Image (cartoon, rainbow, N blue to C red; front, side, top):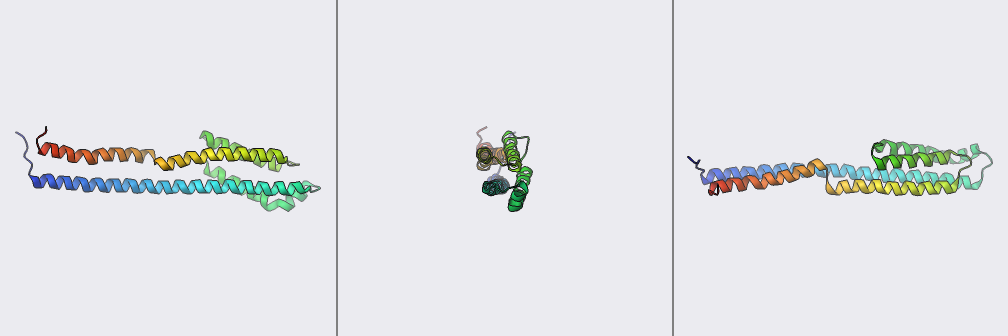
Length: 182
C-alpha cells in the first residue's frame, strides 16, 4: 500500500529541506571564506618577511662595499641589518612547513643567504645569485598557496559538492515520489 502525501506535507518538507540546505551551504561558504582570508594573510606575511630579509641583505652588502678595514667595523655599521636578517629568517622558518618540497627549498635558500652574509669578506655576487634563487623559489611557494586560496580547501570543496547533491536531490526525490514517478 503506497503512502499518501498531502500537498501541505510535501511543501513543508521541501521548504525545510531548502532552508536547511541554504543554512548548511551558507556555513560552509563562510568557513571557506575565513580560511581563505587566513591563507591570504599568510601569503602577505611571507612576502613581507622575504622582502625584509632581502632588504637587510642589500644594506649589509652596501656596507660591505664601502670596504671597512675589519669585520667588526662592518658589523658595527650594519648591526641593525644583521639583527633584521635574523628576525626575518626566524619569521620565515616559523611560517614554513619543512616537509613540503618547495618550502624546504625556500628554507635552504634562506639559510644559504644568511651564511653568505656571515662570511668575511662577503661575496657580493654570490649573495645576489642566492637572492635571485630565493625569490624564484618564494614565487613558487606563493603561487601554490594562492592556488589553494582560489580553489578553496579540499574538505570544503567536497562538502559543497555533496551539499549541492543533497540540496537538489531531496526535493527532486520528494517531488518524484509525490507525483508518482517511482
